[in-house]
Amino acid sequence: MKASTQAWVGAFVLGGIALALGAIILFGNLNLFNPSIKAAVVFQDSIAGLAVGAPVTFRGVRVGAVETIGIEFDPKTQTAYIPVTVRLTPSQPPRGKRGEYDPGDISELLKRGLRAELNLQSFVTGQSQIDLDFDPSSPAILHPDITSLPEIPVRQSTLQRARQQLSELPLRELSENTVATLNSLRSLTERLNRDLPPLVESLKATTDRTGQTAEATNQAIRDLQGKLATTLDAIGRVADTGTQQLQQRGGDLHLLLANSDRTMTQMRELVAQLKTMTSDRSASRANIESILRDLAAAAASLRGFASDVEHDPQLLLTGRKP
Image (cartoon, rainbow, N blue to C red; front, side, top):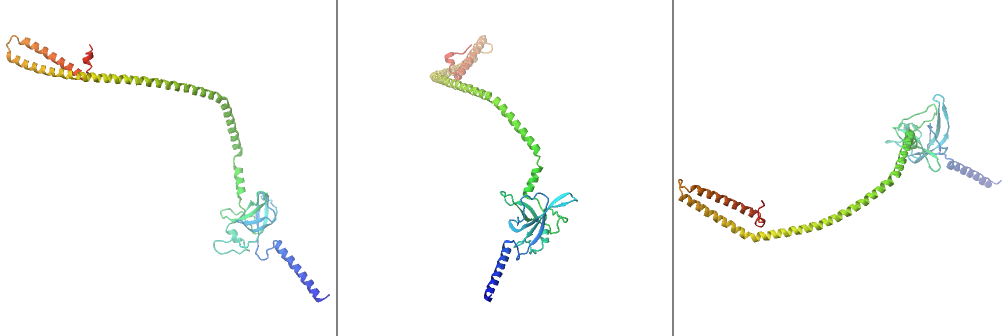
């Protein structure tokens, strides 16, 4: 075989080996250039949907995958555990507030409160994944008898917390209360179906009677308005008549009052003259005093009548009632 042919064959074999190694590195999930962290996550509850190769994420960023899933039984506590081995290969591992952590040392991350939880990857397929995050407030429960790898403590996921809260609800009491409420609603509905139609008929009859009463009231009001208008017209006419009579009798009344004043004046003058004409020893004094008393009474009566006529001019027409 020629040397050139051997060289070509050797180059072809070396190229095939290089391609095979590249394919293994590319498709075999081998991280030859990135440091990896191998750790364990121990679950006690169901991990339905989690399989080998499932992603491991840190706040949505994929940082590794599930490598193995096993089952361990602790005879001391009579409890079954599910240790899951994960391989973390982050290109940029989680950092603290200051400085960087060695990708090969997970102990510092655990001191900072690194926790793992199981969450659904897809509601359609039901596949699960492991999510990592810092949560120092969550208690770190470790299982050194189950695994010798660095263990990432588990915290309850949102679905697990919701399931626990639902399990703590008094479902039986709630269902009994719901049944009692439905029975009460059914009884109320039956009672309404029985009592409501008569009530509707009664309301309808009452409404009809109310309408009739309102119509009769409106008619009475209209009649009363007509009568009231007639009465007001009559009162107006009487007032006009009284005003006319007062105007007509006003002159006579003033003349009467003036004559009465003159008469009183004359009477006073006459009394004065009589007093001067008669003495205390006169025999006719008693008669004169009697006449004066009568005149005074007559004058008082006339003055009272004049005052009454001034307040009520109609006395000139109707006179005083006995």
